[in-house]
Amino acid sequence: MQRHLETFLQLDELGERFPEFQPTFPFPGEYIDSFHRGLAETPLQDGILVQVAKPGSAKIIPGFLRRADALKIYELAYFAAGDILEIGIFQGLSGTILARATRNSGKPERRIVSVDLNPLRLAQTFLTLASQGLLAGREFRHGDAAGVVRKLARQGRQFGFSFIDHSHAYQPVLEVCQELPKVIAPGGFCLFHDYNDERNREPGNDAYKVYQAVADGLPSPMFTFCGVYGCTALYQRTN
Ligand SMILES: C[S@@+](CC[C@H](N)C(=O)[O-])C[C@H]1O[C@@H](n2cnc3c(N)ncnc32)[C@H](O)[C@@H]1O
Image (cartoon, protein in one colour):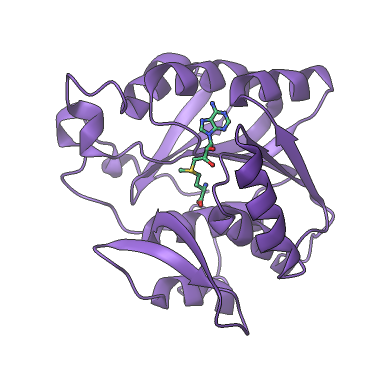
């Protein structure tokens, strides 16, 4: 397991640089497989991978992931042990990457639980996944993220990987961070989107405080920093 401590960013460095994808898990070659390579080759718009084509179709899935974000989501979903918790789904871009990874990993029995506050987004993501035949092992949960995670904990659910991408504001991210210890299994990973965003360091910008919420909400030393990739930050539950 590889950590990239040199990619840690101080508050005043956010958005100054976007570290490239680097592997956390060992695998031969530059990419895990052809889907991973495809993410590396998808055209960008202003540095953002805004859409992924459904393989074998002209249809696109909109979203706002950097290339390094997408590559990291795929890697963690491919290799992490156990079920996957996706918080914030939009129209199914990260959801598609997660589903492709579990299927391609040869461990399709792992379940993906996808959470969103907005019923329209749940419906859109359902259709995105259904049209690609990627609904197997998928569970959808409607509600506020922290409340849903609390409920999952009460049900005894444990996850090996969570992609957290629901809000940029301090309180909603803080509340989820405080619940994650109950559902992330020892050794499991959390990947926070929009952590490395310059808007997080704007004092008057209350809409963006992901970096601060993770620093305040995720218990240390229970969770250890593993690296920044694109605008995401990866943490592992180490005890
Ligand atoms: C940035 S989008 C997610 C993008 C998605 N991960 C992707 O890669 O395409 C954020 C999503 O989080 C949902 N959301 C916002 N606040 C939430 C909350 N408090 N709890 C649950 N979902 C929330 C929104 O409805 C929206 O679908």
